[in-house]
Length: 421
Ligand SMILES: [Zn+2]
Image 1 (spheres, helix red, strand yellow):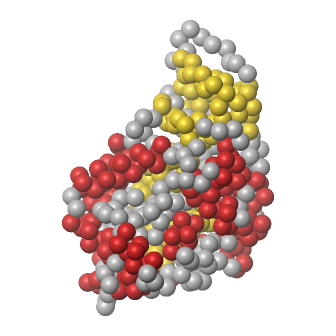
Image 2 (cartoon, rainbow, N blue to C red; image 1 turned 45 degrees about the vertical axis):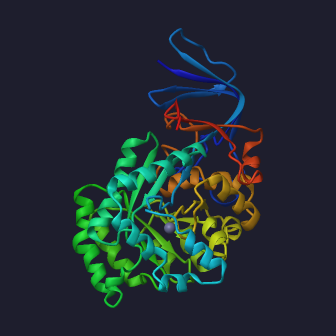
Image 3 (spheres, rainbow, N blue to C red; image 1 turned 90 degrees about the horizontal axis):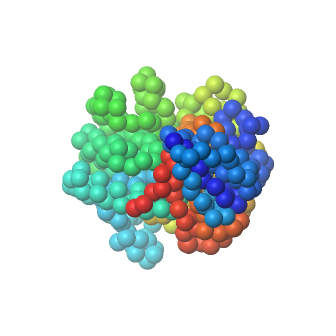
């Protein structure tokens, strides 16, 4: 039996036959949205079987859902979140308003270590319940594919606990969820004086356990000033490559600290943050797309820049340079408590001078390629997952960033089934 969604005024984000093999948009292409007017979508077994104009031929057994002249977009892809956490950190928020720096807060036991301390005390069930509420809300705001990182455990037991919570989320929700092992998020207090011993712990105990229980799809390292050095990052990734685990990097948030260099050298799928990024890094990323592994995607996280008052990643320059930019929420309790990609879209337009069309591709097909899911999600075409959004407004690509803080998504379909919280 097929389900046929009819009476769609416009589908945005169509998978066009001319697309490159990665099914993503580079530089100037990002401002060109592939659309189809007066359209229908035919879905079978959760996949798109047919997309066309007008009315399709109907069989008696087909189920028809009339979308009443609304617009349809592919579900959004959030390629960078830390949504499994024990508690918000709004006390730190007030301290920062009064002038305390991120470093001062960390000194006083705040920051990532604060989240780690609270997470270690919370049960797996409780963590799962909190995280489930966040995932539900994200889906209702249009996000239908989410990457989630560990990294608030920072001990063998707690990192595994976080990853098991992510595994349960994968089973509990119909959307695509991908897990990233981020044991190298920060150095725990007990290892402050002997950082390399913590790396030994990651490589000797954490990583093999993560692999044995099949708990991660990728690995990530916070490669930046005061966190993990280029050499330490390379050491970790050299080991994870032996297990065939792809990598993503937190890089260039605090300075030109070599994150892009390591990411490209180690064939990471993305390098995320990039608040500090020069033409040298642009060239490295651009050249990476001629390699077999499919290139290192630049992922900008404007929620963090907004919330911490640090510079925004120079995505305007990146796009003009020809790079395929991605935007993500970085949803986390310390530096970006923003879970809606619609709000990120607004920040990207107003603060980074990205066009609404460019933003749209940065949170759909480009984000999908940063997870190597460009043939599953991020655009609408034959054989893709039927994960799509029915929008409240006309010209929805433009109204998403325009109506800051208002949810523009009316209905969410995942594998062709409507999602209800
Ligand atoms: Zn992050």
